[in-house]
Amino acid sequence: METIKITTNYQDKEKWDKFIVENSNPASFLQSWAWGEFNKDILENEIQRWALTDKNFLKVILMLIKKSLPGGRFYYYCPRGLIFKKDYTTKRINAYVILLRKIKQEIKNIIFIRLMPPYKFKEYMFGFIIRLGFIKPKILTHSKEPGKTLILDLTKDKETLLKEMHHKTRYNIRLAEKKGVIIREMNKKTLKTDIDIFYNLTQTTAKRDKINVYDKSYYSKIINYFFENKQNIKLKLYTAENEGKSLAAIMIIYFGNTATYLHGASDNTSRNLMPNYLLQWRAIQDAQQAGYKIYDFWGISEHNKEWAGITKFKKGFGGQIITFMGSWDYVINKPWYNLFRILKIIKKLIPIK
Image (cartoon, rainbow, N blue to C red; front, side, top):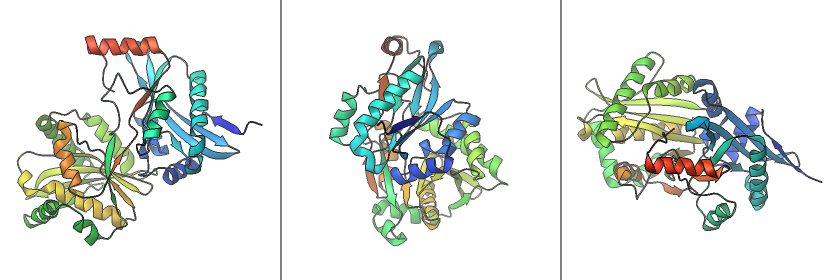
């Protein structure tokens, strides 16, 4: 008797989020119910929530976000998913096969699926994914989540966290305090002004570091949507100031037991005051006092030269490095996938979504 059932339009919000918190570490907010609603209601992306049950027990979940491609084509992105029940890993192969078969049957005209499993890298898993038919992304290679992150254990006390930092990081935190840097948290009255400040700082950062950032409307949407805490995701925006001038700002997302440093920006003229160090320390302490167990720095890379500065900065706070399984594409329509790859190479026509 077949005990496995797949639901392609899962509806139980509370069970969904509870499952994520219990079976991902750090908690995968990109698979959360609220992140799906944000994508659907605010960003106007089509989403699908799939669930696999075995003997009526929830064992696997995945939220798929529809992404457009040129020529009216599309793919589905599953950020920080699939998520497996911890006691179901021995049946991982069977679950993948069933889910992939169902996706090919249910979703018409799809080019590929992109997964970013929320689990630590393991050699045997690497081979397992390849044997299933997954490949490393050949197109939209910048449209994926960080492959490594750094997390702090917030169950440690304040003194231990300080002790485990690099001595220069501790020094810079104290220097910022000594120089009169203050940290201000966004509230309802400052919401509009703080969005403007944050966006202006991102523009400065983008020009200085030669990186791509989101447009103002995206930052405004995510801040307004999650700030009121109507969902299981919360958001805080912190700004560092000195003598009335905004020096830097960071955005923190909270879900489950995890606080995640999602976005940050700074100006060019007052970096000697070390505002970024004090910002992070304030966010870490606030998360700890609020009962969160993990602080996720959201992305490091020892190999990408463009990330060298931010990686060194984050590693200065101590913590544990986690290497994920990385991004993987399961190609369903190979001719179209290869065509987009050729266009990318020859004409660079594929936009980054």
